[in-house]
Every structure is written in C-alpha cells, then in structure tokens.
Length: 75
Image (tube, rainbow, N blue to C red; front, side, top):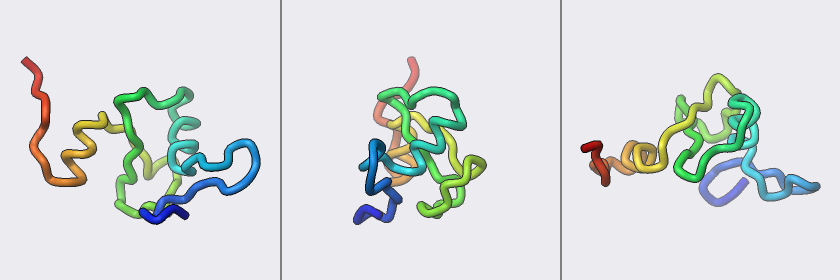
C-alpha cells in the first residue's frame, strides 16, 4: 500500500502497478489514456472490484476530488 492508501503490486513483472488501474484497464480492455484516471465510486481505495471502478477525465476527476472548478471549459 502506498502512503495515499492505494494498493500496489509489490513483486514480479507488475511491481509498482496500482491494483485499481490494472483491474480498470482489464474491465475496459485497453490502457487508460494520458488524460484519464481511475475513480473508486464508493470512495474506498481498497475496494478494487470492477463494478466499483470507473474512468474519469483527469481534469474532471481532480476537480471532483479537490472541489476545484473546471480548469478548461468547452467552447
């Protein structure tokens, strides 16, 4: 577990990979894009079930987590 409470794989070829991202990419059938992040729907960072994970755009996810207004808006 990292200091922020996320589970990471600690050995083998996937060492350092976050479990929730691995599960989410498996659910999607593709890697996350650079502008995407994984989000735990119920807020529990240890709950890495596929049904508890969703993709959010990076700027929207950060705004949601930190209560900040959107940095960019559609024109």
